[in-house]
Image (cartoon, rainbow, N blue to C red; front, side):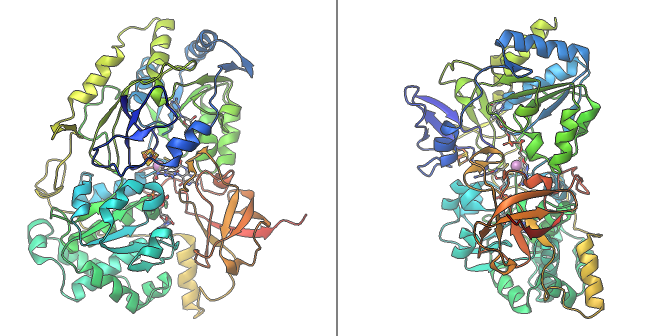
Length: 600
Ligand SMILES: Nc1nc2c(c(=O)[nH]1)N[C@H]1C(S)=C(S)[C@@H](COP(=O)(O)OP(=O)(O)OC[C@H]3O[C@@H](n4cnc5c(=O)[nH]c(N)nc54)[C@H](O)[C@@H]3O)O[C@H]1N2
Ligand SMILES: Nc1nc2c(c(=O)[nH]1)N[C@H]1C(S)=C(S)[C@@H](COP(=O)(O)OP(=O)(O)OC[C@H]3O[C@@H](n4cnc5c(=O)[nH]c(N)nc54)[C@H](O)[C@@H]3O)O[C@H]1N2
Ligand code: SF4
Ligand SMILES: [Mo]
């Protein structure tokens, strides 16, 4: 039996055990703290069923691995490369290719397609992003799930929230929302207002945590004044919420042990950092940091606290708006920018301009089909690695269980290119893995992340601790819709009443695909009020592009929202090529879409 971990980009980072004779039936490693007996179908079904790329290709012709690597070496020598790395495999060894880029004066990416806007907001308030350990979540009385879809994206956290008072804040009536004690079916992109309004009411009712604020939040009075600069009535009307809704929410927030589980959903906007900053400021008003059974959980930075042996100083371009056409040689590793980046039509056009587009991955996708050179990768079962998690503190070595008949690991790819290009100085794979592992302390026989603390922020904020929380103190938002709303109010017209011409686009994760891998949808979910019938073809358009999808009538939606799951073919034709105000992140939901039936 071989111990390894799931490589997929998922909160849970499950520890798994592989019987090399039956690699298609992986099991959850018994006794692991995040174990609930089962692994998900993504890993145990869809991954095995997805055909791998077996042969390297050059210009569409199958070649030997040697020939393909020679071609990569030539392309790198000809023009210094851009490396665009996706999140297809979250093992640390994915980073080894940085060393190649460094030697050739190449370029990497910065920013985020994922959690970057929200992460920037956390830094504004707390100065450092420490993970809330699951064992603190287990001690809570009330769990507020705020834009995170636990049963779909984070299923192994479910046992930690069972039996608690559950509040869900989500524009969709998700499975979890149906089970919740309270569901606030919030208007998309309005969480920042909700958080500020709640902080104001908490204070108006004199239920702020004065003792905590005296220690760690002495600028609280200014924050309260700031929350008072928004008009309650306008905000409630804009969000479509009543005073009763706020009252209901407050009864849960005013309990002793409250945890917020915040997900990517709240921050897929230009203002994503403000949302996390506002939620943190609300949590501070309630004194939720550094106390048992309290806290705010978000995607953690699993590399924090490490000295990364693959950290290099090279120029970077934003990952969400990468100007591919400025480079002659581009290496795409573990990703599918042609489909996962926003404004994908533009991305495809830019990728077509690249002279040597090299794709290094497991599966065919929209990017591999555009590539001049295709290099098949080894799967996680066929290589050694180390898995860190953004959802919990446990670190899991990934041991090779199978040889694998084709493909190449990231380490071997790098080593082969070093050799071909006459470079020296690459250490052994073992040495790098040991360097990572040696930095992880062991607690009760388990390796954990270097920055793990059982009770984050108990000793204050900032990188060294000891500092106060910085409350949110400004907010400037000029998204079209809000301006229009203000104008509409001015003209005394109810904005939400009339027929809807432009819908919010929600694009959350779904159960059968992992971003653009595995079983992808071709459907647009529509509220019944949109007037379409099940199965009808629909043209969905935004100012950035359009796609044609099949209607699926979905009662769980607000009347002003459509939902197209992440990974749906063509969804990112609709999304904008812009960066968040902070964090240089993609803003997949900063867009409104129109619907049109397609006549046969
Ligand atoms: N509309 C919309 N778009 C989104 C999102 C959304 O919510 N909505 N979410 C965004 C988010 S959060 C993310 S993280 C990104 C993800 O976007 P990407 O990082 O582009 O990830 P995937 O599209 O899943 O592509 C992963 C690829 O990695 C390759 N791969 C898998 N394992 C390995 C390996 O071991 N080695 C190598 N070399 N390759 C491997 C596979 O071939 C696979 O096709 O998408 C973003 N795009
Ligand atoms: N099965 C599966 N699991 C996955 C992935 C996958 O593709 N498939 N992807 C992985 C990756 S890369 C990531 S980053 C994580 C992300 O995992 P999550 O954090 O759960 O992110 P999402 O699924 O994008 O969105 C979560 C919820 O936010 C809601 N939401 C959308 N807009 C808003 C809003 O404006 N306000 C509020 N309050 N809620 C909103 C959505 O309806 C959805 O229910 O999941 C990981 N796990
Ligand atoms: S739940 Fe997530 S980490 Fe666990 S097996 Fe499934 S994809 Fe992998
Ligand atoms: Mo992500």
